[in-house]
Amino acid sequence: QVQVVESGGGMVQAGGSLRLSCAASGRTGSIHIMGWFRQTPGKEREIVATIDMTTDYPYYADSVKGRFTISRANAKNSLHLQMNSLKPEDTAVYYCGALEIGRPKYDYWGQGTQVTVSS
Image (cartoon, rainbow, N blue to C red):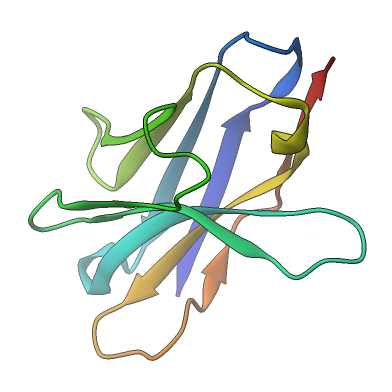
């Protein structure tokens, strides 16, 4: 089992910045990729950014490219999401997820953290 815990989030005005953090514990040796996703009411959860925990190779959704940066934290199996130039449409509940090696989908999720960007 893998446990995922997020921190950060909050409320900020458009153009501002926030940083989210995520830490995984438990059977972390099986984690291949960790990432951030977001969801708004009535919509499906969408990918924001992911990072390969072995190669540090990142992936970004087009909507956040050039504004968000995903990175590994100093602590093992932890990562950050630096969000700059935030827009009202970035408002959502952000979830951190962990994908195990050989698995077709993310099985482990944090509880979610609210990000609200006011105009």
